[in-house]
Image 1: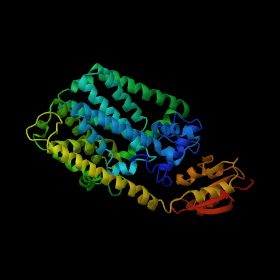
Image 2: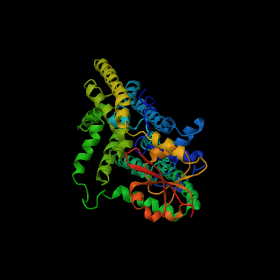
Image 3: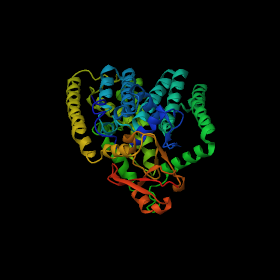
Image 4: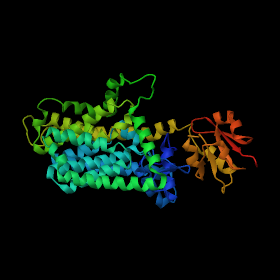
Length: 461
């Protein structure tokens, strides 16, 4: 209900269309690295795009629903992973509570279902952290390898995956006095497996597009993350206070209970397994929140992979507050508190289902009411012969191009436009059309943002 309901409602929104277009290229054979309009597009690795392609294979093309399906699968996997994590440490009842609470936040409401990358990254990071917990709990080389392979696949989905993992693992091992595990053979073996996966991809891509292009793209992506949006305004000092508050607000009401776990002596309510879980959740949450607060380019979706840690802390806080005083057994909340807890959970889930229905039935149609890309796309399909590619220059509205669903090619130089070729110009390019030479105006239309799109045709010579 929470994840699949609304998966096909409304057109693709914001950069969802970009992900869907690149996912469609996978169906045309571009599985190794992302391709957009005939060019390598390496700002993000290929993992999510390949997932969109795989989910779309049964349909023969990428649809609105199939583009959003990877986020549904990743979110579902994260819920079951958190359930398993809590079940081993806290028992069936608390595990069910943690699984039910995890997706009930504003961030998950927005991102599931979505064609964006964020939830796919959440799935890989959650898998990595859960396997890491098992690795240190059982001193298991197998789970170390599984954890680092999850990090590798997360890295091939979005570059930030290693940061989330090691900002969790290093503080936890330091807290427990076990930093030596980072230099043990189990961790080093797991690292070798992860590095081998990523290195194989880098080597294969560099053979096709060259080392320089790959390195240049990675440098630009890092600069985007760690450079303030406005060089004139400098570092956003005010956001050091507002950003953490925004993150906590987006996870209410669970985040309010998470703050209760910071009280001195709170961990003594649990047994050894419960305390290890509590330590893991603290390290999953606060170091990542601090790090992404210090990074100057703020966006609340950047912290989505740590939301499982924060929501888990909220469950631990709630369980600790409702547990009978003096009980030391990990997560045993049996007794008078259990009926209150069950009733509260039922009421909250009913409330959240109402929120979900309202979001799908009212919010989604309202925000996309004037953003339907299909009228412009259908007009393009009428005017451009199906056997001719459509050429683009600086157009960035992928919504119309996704709905157009025919080959499009990006050109950098107007002089490269072939004779009699069709091209789409934005308003600024049309104003500067002298650089293109003589052009035949075919049609005016508007993109999803309401901006002008001008379909033109190049002359014979």
